[in-house]
Structures are given as C-alpha cells and as structure tokens.
Image (cartoon, rainbow, N blue to C red; front, side):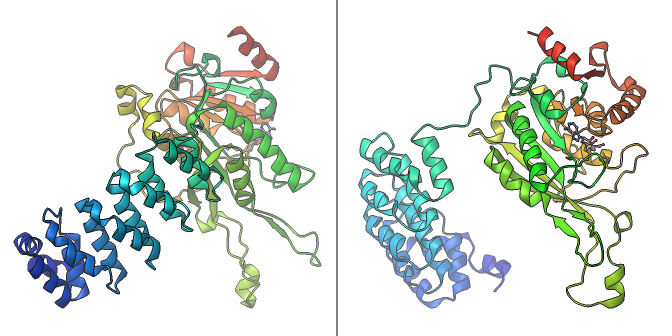
Length: 471
Ligand SMILES: C[S@@+](CC[C@H](N)C(=O)[O-])C[C@H]1O[C@@H](n2cnc3c(N)ncnc32)[C@H](O)[C@@H]1O
C-alpha cells in the first residue's frame, strides 16, 4: 500500500483512537499488515497513556526489524524507568544493530541514575555504535566520579571516534589553536604578495595561522620539466614537507583544497609497461596523519576531446585487460585543519555584514562532479581554469580572506581571489612564471581598489626583510 493511501486510512483521528485504547491498539498490531503497522508506529506521536506500553512491548518480538526498531523508539518516548530491563535486554540481544542501538538510546533518554549500571555494562559491547550511544547516555552523569572513571578507560578503545569523544569530553584534549591573532585578520605584508622562491623556505618565515584558504595543484611527479625528483618517495616526502607547513600557517578549522590526479610515466620501449602513480591515494594518508581532516572529494571532469586519447589500441583489438579509459577527471580533495570547533564557530568569527557579503549566489554547483573545460596557456603548461578557482574561493572562504597557493604557476588563483574581493599570497619558484603573473596582475591592476592593495612581487631575501619590518 502506498503512503498516500495509508495517510488517508490512518488520519490523525484514527491514530488518536488507537493510541487511547490499549485493546484496539493490540488488536490492530495483531491483525494488520507490516506496512500499516509501520505507518502507525511512525505517526503515533508522544504516548501519554501508560497502558499503551503493552502492545508496543509485544511488538518487540516481531520478525520485522523495522517494526521492532519503531516499537523501541515509541517506548523510549514514554521515558518510563520501569522499561529499563526491557531496553537492556534488547540492547544486548537483538540481532539487529539498529534495534540494539535504539534500545541503548532508550536507556539514555531515561536520564535516570538507575540506568547508569546498564549503560556501563554496554560500554563493553562489541559494536562501536552501541558503545557510542552508551557514552552519550553516560555523559549526562560525567560529574559522577565512578562514571568518569569508566568512561576514561575507553581512551584506549580501538575505535577512533570513541577515542576522540572520550579524549575531548573526559580528558579535555582539543585541537584548538593558541593563536592570539583575530580569526578574520592576517599580517598585512602578506596581502596580495607574490614571493619568487622555494615554498618551504618561504613558509619558514610565515607566522603560524596566517592563511584562510589554500588551493593548489602541486607539481606532478616527473610529468613536466619543472618537476624532476629522483624517486616517487622523494616526491611524496617533498609534498609532505610543504603540506605540513601549509597546515601550520592555516587558521584554525580552515580549508586546504588539493588538486591532483594519478599520472602515468610512459614505457621506455615496447618490452616494458608504463607505470601509473596514484598520487591522490598516496598523499591522502600523509595529509590525515599531519592533522588534516578529510571533508569531501570533488571530481573535476574535462571534455573527452581535451585529454590524451589512450583508446586507439583498444578501439581496434577490443580484448579484455587491454582496456584503457581516457582520463577525463582530476581530484579536488577537500580537507579541514583538524579542530574540535564546528564550522559554525568559524562563521561566527566574522561580522554579520561580511558573512552577508560572502554568501554564495544562486546557480551554485550542487554535486561533487564539476564539469569545467581546461585552460591552455602559452607560458605555463598546467594552469587552473579560472572557473575552478572561482568555485573553490566562493565555497570555502569569506570576503577579505587571505587565499594561498604554494605552487602558484601562472597565478590564476591570485587573479580569481582579487576578482572575488579576497586577497592572495602566492609562492612560485620559477622566474618565468612569476614574470607571467606580473603581466597578468599588473594588467588587471584596476582590480586593486586602493594603493595599499597593490600586488607586491618580492624575492626570498626581500620577503625576509618584509617579515622583519613588521615586528
Ligand atoms: C601544476 S603547476 C601549478 C599551476 C597553477 N595552478 C596555475 O594555475 O598556473 C606547479 C607549479 O609549482 C611550481 N613549483 C615546483 N616546485 C616548487 C617549489 N619548491 N616552490 C615553489 N614553487 C614550486 C612549478 O614551477 C609550477 O609552476
């Protein structure tokens, strides 16, 4: 039976009749089909009448897991401590994890000290979801010394989420910053600054927690002439060093967005095979370990005609295992600097007016598949399309923020930042690309509203002097 029919058959008055008469409710549960029972259970509302418990308790032996789950939910709404042993029984014995978890939630909702021993017993359940629910129930009594001691033991629990909650709630561990600076501000000398030099050396002179958002595409492993490393390991070690520094200079709870994709090193002859390096997958665990929290994976899709055709051979022979798809996608990996503060905390650091000015207008991208054509450039062989930068900046920063690209190349991110009323800080080691940036940014100088906003190009020595002057 579909929902519209059920809705008609069991309107509010019908449900009230069932609710207020234990016998009618019992016979309803005994004689109706599962669909009708589920519908009524979902719409029963708060149960005032203590007598209604019995028919619900009987449903706990129903074969249908969803019915048992809803029966527990409705019993939990009553908040009757006499149900404690029933909840405990189903928390320990039901074959469905969902029913078990809901039963623990029922115990927690009693908010009664009598429930403490049952909740403590459930802390040793083998299902982390059940344990987490028991912790939730016990946190209400965390001032009670024996409860605190029991919860403390879980700091060595194998489950990472349980360890995190205990660390935060009981042991007071947090990832918060000690920065004295205001969240929406940053050192003035970083405003619209391009440093020509090595990124690691440059970042060594940047104060912690200066940057609001980093978006970058690192040099690809031996894919282009600017990225020659002795080995893949050396390459990953280099990126690790850079991203650790990016982590340090990023403000609490702010985002780091990384564009990478697997690359292929062509075979040296027909007697060898080519090798594919899964850069996004190898870099991900390194980022998490240094304190970046994974938030989202966005896939940037380019038109097939714009990418290298790997299909020619397969097109002819059509033999399995020789299939080679054209790689039209790149990863846009979204991370947040780990903190115990919620996103709302970050937003609350800005004035009402700034939040309003930063709001994302209609027609924004609602999926994690972004179709954006590539941009080709006469000087740099791997530039960001401006549309890609625009989206990242609009979705992950506020106006007047400082946007950083450690591998700036042609500086597309800088241009997009200024267009969107943000400021940029860029590092790039190749003088020819820095010159290219100068052309673009100076040509677009009308974008810079005031004298104090003008782009500033320095080498590493001048950068060090700038940082010293500001002290
Ligand atoms: C993939 S490109 C970035 C392109 C850029 N997203 C754009 O829109 O033009 C990587 C850049 O990193 C630069 N680079 C490589 N190693 C560097 C280092 N150690 N310090 C600073 N820049 C570096 C390269 O010169 C290259 O321009």
